[in-house]
Image 1 (cartoon, one colour):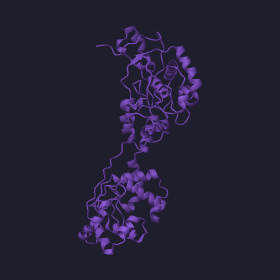
Image 2 (tube, one colour; image 1 turned 90 degrees about the vertical axis):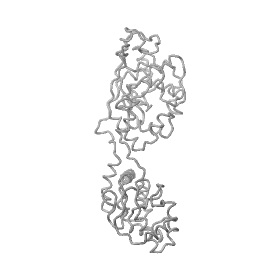
Image 3 (tube, one colour; image 1 turned 180 degrees about the vertical axis):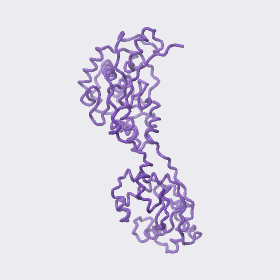
Image 4 (spheres, one colour; image 1 turned 30 degrees about the vertical axis):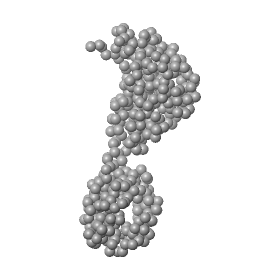
Length: 433
């Protein structure tokens, strides 16, 4: 994830000449110069595009193919970078690059190649209109290099303590826990054994959540359901609905008085919304297959009488007599229910394994062009992930990574990285073979 995230790089050990001749790679440096690089942090590496004089352009990829050149920062460079940071950056990003401002990232210990490229991108308009535009608008490349090297030279911030970090919630387990109060009527796993009570197992979670919220608001009339849901917040309702959607449905074993064959003929008018066999393909409409017949008959009667409000269903039920209602209920009750195509969501730990492929184990990036995420502010990570998901920040790789993230996924990922320890990274040259 290309985020202005915090990370860790050991303090720069400044030594040697200021700028080396530009090799095509670190491997081509003479042995003596390589010895100087061995103890220098990744913050001393900058994009080859800068050294070649090319201007930064708005990016739509991770740009991991650019050559990097070795560039030393002197103590004087760091001091000048510090002065500039104190004058232009500290108000938002904090003294020593540790932000105390909500949704503003830590910069201390961040990869300087990444910082430099991001600052150039902001100058080029890649981030759109932000308060940062005016801060960096007139800064030279030399100034950007020095301030990037300064932040890279700092010790990274401390990770958020585990006991104060937001816990990553497993929505399915949370839903199972919350659904315990529903078991008395709807069964332990959502398959009802109580006549007149609907089974919830295998229903589309969007439908179940919408129905629960309608009971809570009074849009659907049931004093029992309204009181049961009064203190249940919407995220918990979503978790309950997801839990039931992932449970294996089963046909009701309760008696189903009525003529199934006659019900099958009458059910032709229901297929458009509920499916020809009672298995709905639209999350706005519930599946009826295998449902308790007494419940189905009571629901149809309520629509006909208007006590359950839905103008479409009221019109369809208006012409049904008691026998036709029982026949429809018997038909649908006898159909085989099917589980919707709903996958168990990934945990924050599972999502982070995808992120770590680019951003390093536990968010400690070993690519100087990509930001480290370890110990970054959680509220900042949430903001940036939401911006990538919404397309506010344009990046094809990040758009693909964030497309399927839910709000809970984003919160969980942000908390996950916020309390990961930032690790020191030193870049060395491998000996030639």
